[in-house]
Amino acid sequence: MTEQEKLSRRRFLQAGGAVLAGNAAGVAVPADSEASDSLPQTAPALHKLLRRAAVPTARGARVVVVGGGWSGLTLAKYLRRFNPAFDVILIDKQSAFVSFPVSNAWLADQVDLDFLSHSFFDAANNHDYHFMQATVLGFDRDSRRVYTEAGYVDYDYLVLAPGIEYDYPRIGVEDSEAQNLLFHRYPGGYVTSSELLTIKHKIQRFRGGTFVLTVPSGEYRCTAAPYERACMVAAVFKRQRVRARILLLDMNSGIKIKQAGFARAFEQLYGDYIEYLPSSLISNVDIEGRRIETEFDEYDFDDAIIYPPVRTSSLIEEAGLADPQSPQKAAKTDPFRYHLVDDERVYVTGDSRSQPFSKGGHTAHSEAQYVAEVIAAHALGHEVQWRSPQTMCFSAVDIEPLRAMSIITYYKYNQQSGLFAFDRTHLIEKWDTQGGQASLAWAEGMYRDMFYV
Ligand SMILES: Cc1cc2nc3c(=O)[nH]c(=O)nc-3n(C[C@H](O)[C@H](O)[C@H](O)COP(=O)(O)OP(=O)(O)OC[C@H]3O[C@@H](n4cnc5c(N)ncnc54)[C@H](O)[C@@H]3O)c2cc1C
Image 1 (cartoon, rainbow, N blue to C red):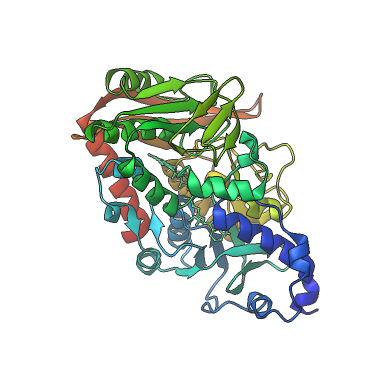
Image 2 (spheres, rainbow, N blue to C red):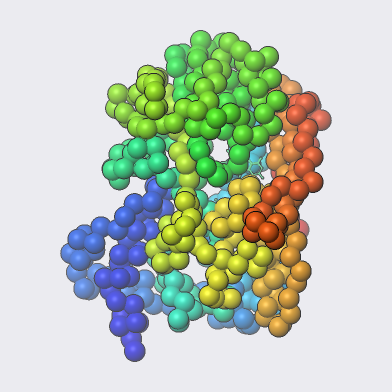
């Protein structure tokens, strides 16, 4: 059977089209089947997609890791460490890694971009795996093949760690063009590094007026980050003596984490800047009119950072793996082993996971070491005992000097309810310079582990 027969052109283009559209903008956009049908049979790009990618021939069981974020980078390193016979390929569509953790402090000039930026080549060279820069379009579990824009790669094990996408329909923005416009004009800063650069320019150039920030509902990436960002934006306006009102529209009924600490910061440090509005359920955004609508009110703004609710990468939905019960369209996986319920060769980790662990870089990093051990053991016919991921999260509150607070937590599984809950939480809500320095030392340690040693 030829490749073209195995994966019908139309089905492939529909899947690929959707993923491409979604990833280009960090937005889930349905495939345009009419456009796909109008592509000529001989489109050169199609032939490129259906040939073997230019990667070295596998020297052992091949593990393909999709997504070079905190989860994928850690997995690629530890898979080789726990089973040196594995041949590991890490695929990411981006050319370099820019850290989201500590990016809020970077917005307020507490670190420079070099601190956040690292090379995938360094990680792959130092940890003896292959890196391939390409967008993954889909995969076929029968033939164990991953399709990318640069050709296909066969796998023995596949790890999906592609992170999150914005779910704009949940704030009333249904139209895909409007979603793209909203993403580009008022990016949330939680999916791509270009968003972060745009946000920094917005803050630096803001000359006064109303600046809106939003906190999404549901399980979103980094629970503390939107509150931390409000503090950092306010700190910059305060330093620059900009007459600004920051409207922090929270779709939740109250501050979701480090509540006392953030509430105190809003009042004591930024009382003249931050107006915190809980239970602000966003129902629409008028992009051209610069107006945001909630269930009961409307707010005009001069500029904004709009962080909508999030969902799992559409790569998972396009592969037909989304659990219909999951509000975030996550796959159905074994909660302890991370593989698809019907496939012990395919794993889902990091912020794409179905378990309700905090969507954090530290969580993804500690979990990835465990999952690497699980996969290594599976290849040798062993099992490893489940252990909880660890969540550790610092939040910068003030600058010059940098002051931060922190939380560490684990998870436990309740057999009766079948749910995970927090376990052994250590919360420090008093922000200080020790916390500020610890947050930078923590990030440096993480980058060292993922890229250098
Ligand atoms: C502002 C901010 C502050 C944060 N602060 C903290 C903090 O203090 N502490 C903390 O622990 N966490 C923090 N986080 C959260 C942390 O960044 C995420 O939880 C973490 O990045 C999740 O890792 P991941 O590997 O699952 O996803 P990601 O890091 O998003 O990586 C996913 C990767 O997959 C790639 N990808 C996606 N689709 C494809 C495709 N089709 N083909 C190829 N590649 C693809 C993407 O390019 C990306 O590199 C923060 C996040 C933000 C935005």
